[in-house]
Structure formats: structure tokens, C-alpha cells
Length: 215
Ligand code: AP5
Ligand code: MG
Image 1 (cartoon, helix red, strand yellow):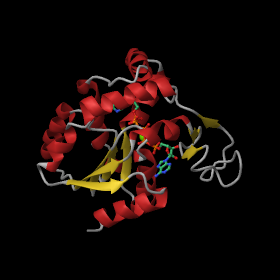
Image 2 (cartoon, protein in one colour; image 1 turned 90 degrees about the vertical axis):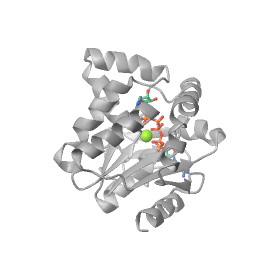
Image 3 (cartoon, protein in one colour; image 1 turned 120 degrees about the horizontal axis):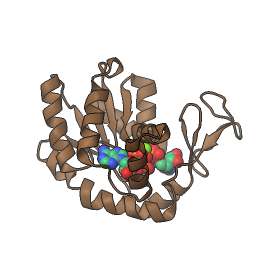
Image 4 (spheres, helix red, strand yellow; image 1 turned 45 degrees about the horizontal axis):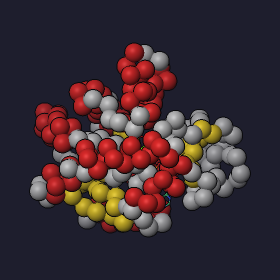
């Protein structure tokens, strides 16, 4: 099964994608994670992406479209994938349609995580991840079971994202409303858009997504 999780920064896309990947085996394709890996590599593209991301703006469509098309072709995506952070513009959504058709693949559900803008800054500024395996946590909402120890891999090293500060979050939200939200009517018109309450507790959001994918 191939899904899109859509929602503003901090909506819980990554949190839910990780859970679905662990339980159902579809692979999480996070364009944000892919870009952060490119930034770490220090290539010219990485340097360009780094400054765009720190400014809370979007990386050019053509870069993202090529990145996701190549990633979908990798063997682990054959059993199904969850797009987390892509598409983010109508141009990307149209390109995704074309590439899926060319690859003979179907898009089963587009799930919008509906959240209140006011909750997002708190969610994002409290977020941290395991530096080794990438499992996501939050200072208030999802702490590791054993203090300073990753629940999944046992590592004691954690990290925070460079764009997770209040100022950049404001810019990322603006980009979402201006450039990404217009995707919603695009998918609604094609009858694939479903919604979940992203303000609910993490387990409840998972239950709502499972109801959709099992329908
Ligand atoms: P990306 O990495 O995709 O960031 P984002 O969309 O801003 O989303 P986040 O990762 O911040 O939030 P999330 O929805 O995954 O929430 P999470 O589960 O972590 O993109 C980063 C940048 O890369 C972009 O700004 C852009 O520059 C660039 N980029 C990426 N893709 C691009 C594209 N396609 N085109 C152009 N540019 C692109 O949850 C947040 C926190 O809240 C966590 O701590 C979590 O524990 C907690 N939490 C989650 N759910 C709940 C809940 N239900 N209740 C309480 N707490 C919760
Ligand atoms: Mg994320």
C-alpha cells in the first residue's frame, strides 16, 4: 500500500510514519530526512539545501521530484511506502501522479493530519531524536522510557534539528499554508483525501490512520 501523510510542520507525520513502518512494513520516505542526509554530506547541493531549510523555505521542486523518484525505485519501496513531507507543492503533486503512472504504481490514500497551528511551535521546539537510529521523542509528550536512553536502540546520544526554533517554525508554517495547503483540494477532487485528528494523543492518531488503511 502506498500512502501520503500530509500536514504542517509538527503535525506528527514522522511519528506516525515510523509506527506504520514498524507495524505494516511500508517504508517511510521522508524528504526532510533525505535532505538532512544530503546536508550532512557537505556537497554543493547540501550547502544550498542547508540555507534554504534554515530559512524555513522549500527546496526547489525539480530537486525534490528527482530525489523521490529515485528513492521509490529502490528495492525496499516495492512493498509499499509512506510519503512523509512530499509532495509539498501542486507542481510536486502533479509530478508524483505522472511518475507513479510511469512506474505502474497506485496511490491508495492521502491522509491529512489536521492540527491547530498554535500547538505546533510547542511540539517542534520540544522535539529531539536518537542520533543513532532516528527515533523521535518530545520533552513533554514522548520521553524515552529510561531517561537519556533510546527505547529502540539503547543509544545515549540525542540530537535536535537546526530548523526547530520558534523563528524558523513561523516561516515553515507560512510556507505550508501558502505552498502546500493548495494540494488538499487537488487530492479532495480526486476522492483520495481522508482526514485524521492530529490534535488527539499519538496512539489515537495511529488508530484513526489504521481505520483508514484497513477500510
Ligand atoms: P520536514 O523534515 O518534512 O519537516 P516538516 O514538514 O516541517 O515536518 P516536521 O518533521 O517538523 O514534523 P512532523 O509532522 O514529522 O512531526 P513529528 O512527527 O516529528 O522538512 C524540513 C525542511 O526540508 C522543510 O522546511 C523544507 O525546507 C525541506 N523539505 C522537505 N521536504 C520538501 C519538499 N518535498 N519540497 C521542498 N522542500 C522540502 O512530531 C513533532 C513533535 O511532536 C515530536 O516531538 C513528536 O513526538 C510530537 N508529537 C507528534 N504527534 C503528537 C501528538 N499527537 N500529540 C502530542 N505530541 C505529538
Ligand atoms: Mg518529520
